[in-house]
Image (cartoon, rainbow over all chains, first blue to last red):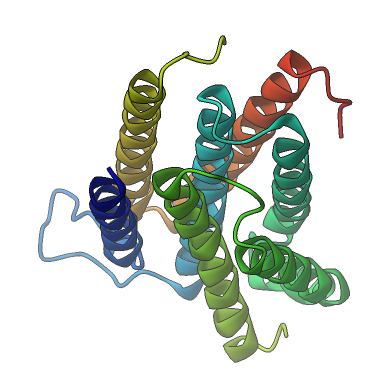
Length: 167
Length: 73
């Protein structure tokens, strides 16, 4: 049973990693003239990475609830995880509108940096806590992979914002 | 939702839920990564979808918290 659980958790982790790697770059769909496909702009990429933070936060939330509903996490541990995840999601909700264009990001640079740091640090704390008390390895790997993806995309946004002079 | 009472049923329910979540992830990423020719419209869509995903995540967590009689945060 333990070996099967390890294999299943490894497969799930690989699927999420593949999804993350495949989704690192946004792609322009050519219009009627297929030769006209201008490159993706920096702000499209930032907003795509920002949407990925939300996609993986939602997946982490759903995986946490699945762990709770199948009895692999108790109420107290669920509450600890829920609070951490909601902290990330609320910071992200506040951050998103500041990322709609360069002018808005520059005008709010004093708010952007702490919000990205809060997302990254909270994600890091959840991951280093071993995703607080989830007993089942598949479930723990799934939640962990999603939170790592959240942190990775938040860091990716910060990298691009540095090149734009926002951070 | 009532917790299934055997380990096999619990593991099956969990595996099904995790597979559905992974599939939903992949579909959302593919949908968001396909950008059209209008840059402003793309950014507006990404902003709006991002807010929608955040709201769904909070709702999922708080629905379960309500079922567990936990206070809202």
